[in-house]
Image (cartoon, rainbow, N blue to C red; front, side):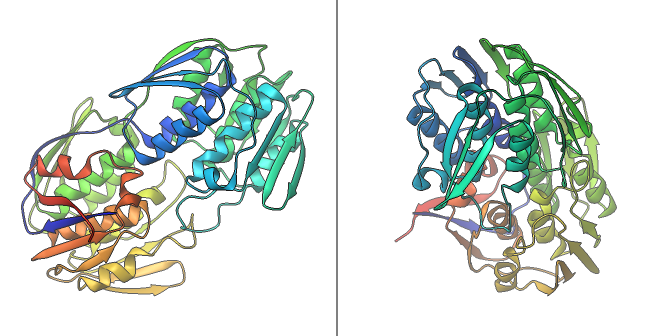
Length: 418
């Protein structure tokens, strides 16, 4: 096990390049199972979740080749093998193999998936959609079995714009007979990237990025070359690193439209933002103003940025209220931030934060991926030394985070935990 040791109080200055988006990479890799041809992918980040997904694809029979940020997946020999509890519990996104395997083979059997313990993320919407497409679903002994002769297009209305359900149903419907319409679909940029990937394979999908996605099923899919979009959550985290250290960081390989909710809150907090076509410069002004925020589905403020924004608000002038409307258990960073001197009270699904002049270094824990990122940000701003343990959570979603921050002046080291 590793940990980060951070000597805080350093002003960060320089340039950071954003890696490919984790939350686009995982469904795209799963979608490669739909074709018996090769998928050539670029801008694939070197993350623990990506490694697990590639291992899962190999377990199913895919041949995988990796060279730096490029990955080739040959799914010609894939079989719908049972996916065990051990494999599924390593990563929540492993459930995304269900749609492709069901659509291509008419059968899939998987254990209920795992992932960060940030709240209830039931499979109900996924399974309801599969049933609408004609699949028979059986749940027994912790396993889900879905089977069909041939999926048939249908009108599907999601009770909530779930990203995972939208992606799974898009993939399932790609080879279904006739037309499928997914209403109240998630609008995240990663959904658009998945559509572009599938259409590159020969699928016929329109409407990603809106609340109605139409999929006209095709009889087969072929080879594709695709470059994954930049990671908007990584980009937002770096933006907050500049703000919390009163720094001056230019973030490159970015799609500014994808981080508009974060930009709006940083401007409200008094941070200077300068943007270009594919870069954003964030400059601290010495004063951080308290702001309120509520997480919402895209294009609202992302739940994946809530913990990092809370870290910034701990040293803001005034009182802020952070409300979490997506996951009911996504405030685990509060206890860790309190160890560093933060003044935070939790009332239901809202956190009330009274800004303090400074945070103090402490031994803290990365309880999940984004809470871990928040603790790194807090450590960068705090006095003295902060030790962040359980950083395997952070490695799931941030590529070479410590190296990127050292490149802009941070004193952060990865060390073996004794």
